[in-house]
Length: 198
Image (tube, rainbow, N blue to C red):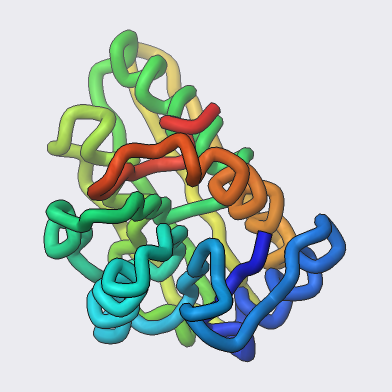
């Protein structure tokens, strides 16, 4: 597949580009040459990038967080958005949803590098939403971290901690590859969450 990678020089994109090429995809420089667009840019750039892709008839995979996906819900091309492309993070969310059905209370602690623009993270917000929406979120931004999330649950006489650590940004490549594989079968408009593809 010919892929336009927006944000290819960024923290995720610089790792993702070689991963896409290693999987057999060809990186291109314009929407006119692309079969799909992948966006890992900045929140303020996403909607314009998606609208440009829509005008070119190019479906999109978006990994940028901190924007409102409802702004492209009416897209005439498929737009797949996931706040986290690590398979382990998707499993953490699934396990947390199941655990929340059996334990009384939960809180989320998400820890990211000091340059992360949004707090709380998109992953933490989606986890809380799927757990019922009223789960407190605590955000930590420090040098030396990459991307980490803990869901702590408590019940009478017991606690359960579910944790995911993305130690390097290579953890996101398999999820993006899965999204590209499934993209042609997705309907126009927005599809949210890697779990919808598993």
